[in-house]
Image 1 (cartoon, rainbow, N blue to C red):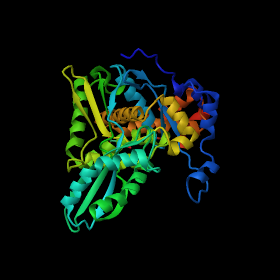
Image 2 (tube, rainbow, N blue to C red; image 1 turned 180 degrees about the vertical axis):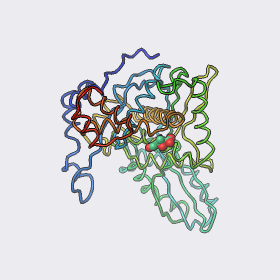
Image 3 (cartoon, rainbow, N blue to C red; image 1 turned 90 degrees about the vertical axis):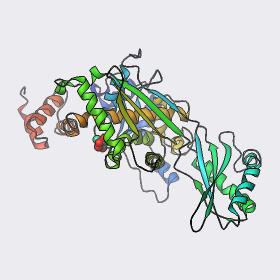
Image 4 (spheres, protein in one colour; image 1 turned 90 degrees about the horizontal axis):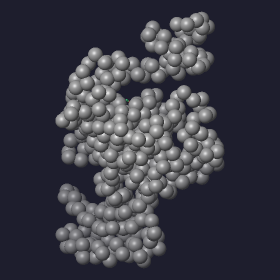
Length: 424
Ligand code: MEV
């Protein structure tokens, strides 16, 4: 059990009181409320005509490597994702929370070389010159010299076929940045030198989004006795655990199921990636390419039982996220999101995000293997309908419960129930 005090029950507080309950300062609350301004949007993209909003929620109960996180910010339009994450994190917390790790933040840039007269000889010349090229990038070339990121080494690959290609991989330690700009600049700077060395022609010079040297992983244990909810208490815990393991095996063996299993994981991951101003398309591309790395698309997270019958989950995926640069720096809400997470490095951010993916996957599999996801969705939807009908305080839950019991989650019914205002 984690010793961290239980977090405040956000859902019981009015919307306006929640940021302060999470410990945010007045300035942070103001930044959160202001969000991205049209003027900032104008500086970010072309032909800007405004800004597009998304709900920003906070998942609670996360303990990662022994550290309790005030709140995990999630920007997402899909109901039940934030609640599902919080629920899973609460169960994991009872066993000490999540254990997470990550590799060094290494990205790969690619230079595609064509018309190389002798590919093997060119490869040998690149290997012989690699150290000199790396130190040129790091020490001498003004556009790539940096205190924050570092070129590490070159690798070469030959792609057989017509035409044959010599591909150079430039490995970069991106530190706390996502690194796309630095890597692209370095690839473009390096290309003429590679052309001279190989007597070939450089075509593409661009970052690879299969960032498989920049991995994050997480594990957690969910105690078997915590698996049952009130509605499925009749089923023994080991039967519930078994169903979740069977659900995991389904995704591990079948790409049709794996795509949906991983979509659920990305529900959690993308929401944090977006809230922190990171490039979620890059994270998506990497995740799915990594899921197919062995030639068959499979599950990014898996579940098994341990000797005591508890569920043990594990996730591993590439997570190219930064805490400096890009929208992370520009977007006022992204700054608040990072402050809430309390992460000091890009690696730490990636580790928390991996935990969120695992939490989301557990909650989805548990619901799917038991009551199905529609029941939970319906309950949340019913709350929203009750609020839209004008219900307040305890009447929100009362009317929502009645709508669900009647299987009639409609605004007119909620309004009629509210008009009666008699104990249901
Ligand atoms: C829905 O957005 C996500 C799920 O389909 C994930 C899953 O099936 O594992 C519930």
